[in-house]
Length: 113
Length: 108
Image (cartoon, rainbow over all chains, first blue to last red; front, side, top):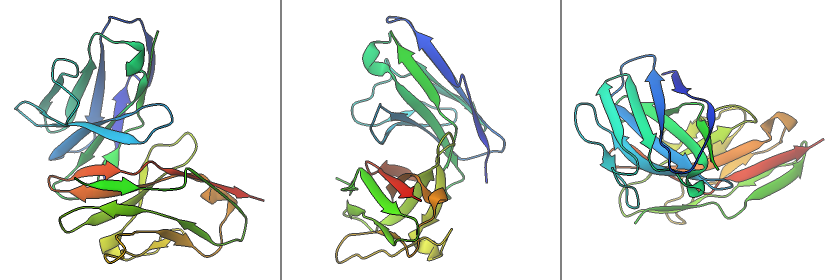
């Protein structure tokens, strides 16, 4: 299994600003993902974070709004840019080795005022 | 396109009663399905996966391709089973599509 940590655990931000969320895995993994969980809703995949190359975004999500980095096999960041209140959500990182089970981080709870 | 549907947002049962959390899916390929659980103030964690055909914490789930369902069952619910349950479908590239989730409340 993989243990995943996220920073920050929560934040309150002003509209128009940006926040970078960090995801750290305790072992090397091949796959890392970022999800969003809006209030009262289920998880929606934002993108697959690819090591050493650009992330692969799902429909409805774009790099300018959610830039993602993955410099190595254990670390990734998601930035929520030019935030608005609609970006208030829980952002979750997950990781897996190949086709193995995905493990999830504790989430980052974001409130945009 | 793939889709996972959990028709019940909330399911409330008494302790000792049977539980069935429904999950239906649509997917053109060969499905691989999971149940994830999130207890209060804890992270999302895997409960079981259909290919394992195992029972975890008394829960079982059988993939029914004819009915495109993967319902989660437990014969006797316990109070500690109270949580959010998510059904998820894995597609190529290990990406997961989640259902809307069902909150299970087990009353004493």
